[in-house]
Length: 509
Ligand SMILES: Cc1cc2nc3c(=O)[nH]c(=O)nc-3n(C[C@H](O)[C@H](O)[C@H](O)COP(=O)(O)OP(=O)(O)OC[C@H]3O[C@@H](n4cnc5c(N)ncnc54)[C@H](O)[C@@H]3O)c2cc1C
Image (cartoon, rainbow, N blue to C red):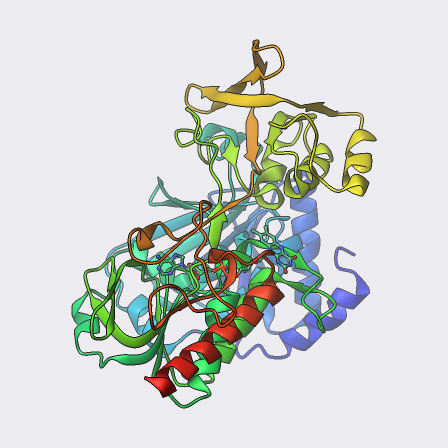
């Protein structure tokens, strides 16, 4: 039995929601993965009379396609979609059977109107928490539009193919055989990349806002909800609704919720914001702010939005090393997400740059997969908590190098090594390895405010106890500010503060 009793019980409930018969067309050999895949498919068929199974030969073996009776949908799973991809499988079964996907009608229309042929292939690892969103989005597109097909490929089951195509990060998506994108993407982002984003003219008609929030992470979402609940005209502009939590796996300190996962919390945030009358402008980036009579915010697409008050909640992003080789080999051996990309470095030698909590956690995690992990720390000592350091030093396949200044990440078409300077002796050293995980903290997304809003030497926006900045009517909240600590619950609290501060400002002016 490939599914345990608890999962089977849950699955049985989902399968009851199936609307019409479907057929799984299976391409199997006599290898071990094929046997597991057949076991899974047979188990599904015993659980629902709506699921039929047929043998066939597909482009990859082992793989299976999920089809309507008499009609190919183009949804294929190569490998065994368990782990994080199990949900993708369940959703594919339901959606192919006729259950409508939970997607806005406007997006459904956008998908149906796509012209041309789109043959997507997504390489995943079953432990990657960013992969299912991409797989599920492309499957929805495949189900809704006959010109779109999508194959999920488990890299671990197709190692030779992964090596041949130089896939070194997951998810990596190919479109019609050419590299298309890497990393987490929403359905809307994929559609935008295919060329269907709203241009500036869509925004020209908008009346001025009372409160305009820039940023759709925990801080921005909270600020927008607090403003909308006052009954004032509220808008939110976000480059990527959800923010950093989209890249977070387990969250255990979001008080009152013992355990949740980032993407799940992001979906709840969006649902909560949508419950109110908030104009959400997702996938839009602000590039300039100017205080005139009203405050004007210019977007990258050229549109200018006007508002009486603005709340900046643009958060932070991974800090880059800024050494030669880092940008060139991004996704070709240089990685930032150990949970996602770690499995692709199975049996290889990798380095983790950074000896803080995130670096040491990454190294512990990677030591279970990689052959060897070298931790490079710039300072004379690691900065991670003592419990993490103890665990790190107990591992036999980890080397820690302190006082190490990374000089270059080397490679030809992908990473083959790293060069560092021993800061104590000035000597240069080179280590041959295949992967580098950069874990050196975060930088605030505030460069676009240069010359307008006051920031400290780290680039963090300086705010007072009401979240107000030096510019009247402009407030800020969350990781982009000079708050002492950066956490979800703290950014939400400051989002609420900034919103109440802005409301107070509006009443007085
Ligand atoms: C791997 C990882 C694990 C973490 N784990 C935890 C944890 O377990 N518990 C915890 O409490 N915290 C955790 N954190 C920290 C937490 O995620 C952050 O403190 C929190 O997300 C900050 O929220 P924010 O809204 O201020 O910013 P962000 O989450 O960074 O959101 C910023 C928003 O602004 C948008 N944006 C940026 N620039 C622009 C622009 N120019 N125009 C328009 N929009 C823009 C972004 O797209 C995004 O929507 C973790 C962080 C990381 C990276």
